[in-house]
Amino acid sequence: MNKPQQRLESLARMLTYILSHRPDEFGLVLDAHGWLSIKELLRALSEEPGWGFVRRSHLQDAVYLLTPRRFEIAENLIRSLPANAALCRTTESEWPPALLYRAITRKSHPVVAQQGLRPPPDGQLILARNVEMAQRIGHRRDPQAVLVTVQAPAAAAAGTQFYRYGEELFLTTAIPPNFLQIPPCPKEEPKKPASKPSVSEELGHSTAIPGSVLLDIQGKPLNRSKEPRRKKGPEWKEQARRERRQRRRQPR
Image (cartoon, rainbow, N blue to C red):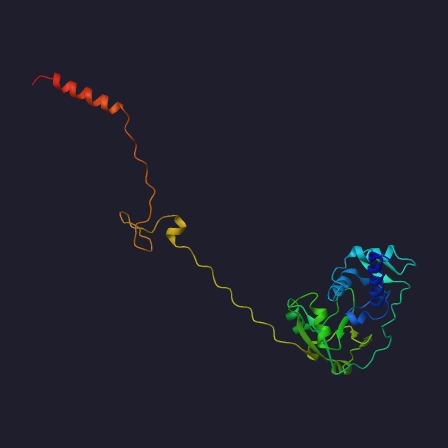
């Protein structure tokens, strides 16, 4: 087996582990049919030492060049074959641990503080068992993600259902803000009003007094554009001679 084939087999084993065994270990959740976003998969792989080189083309090689076929791609999704979406997902809700975590973007910080955590339109709300996993997931969307702590048992007692996903994650629908520990939103600094130009600047006039000389920081006169002096041509000499001759001819 040559080196490219060895690399392809290594990638296939890694993909099989993620898509068929432990997606939760990488902060990933498969949909109800076992599909996973290729973009999310590539982000997770880039965090693993030695796997930052993987691009979509490498995934396509793993799909189409290996036999028997182990994966399939549909548009921007990938899954293992045979698909096993229920591998990590529990069908019954469980009592959650004391604390769960999620790292949110700075942009969503004010909204979450007022309205609580909400799931994205295309999936469920993902919560992590520990801070490290929550930050790993959050940093994929914002390198300065804000950590939110969920008082999970209190939320469960109020009716929120939690579903374990593998060993690292929990899934739920929404968490009201009264069950969240979230840092205060940073205060926006008031914008300073732009300084207005002076009347002379608006009119394009100089502030110098007529007849005065502008000096630079060292007290020397600033260079002023001077019009070049016009040189007199040879005609003026001839004109002067004619005038002298006329004066001599006049009677005294």
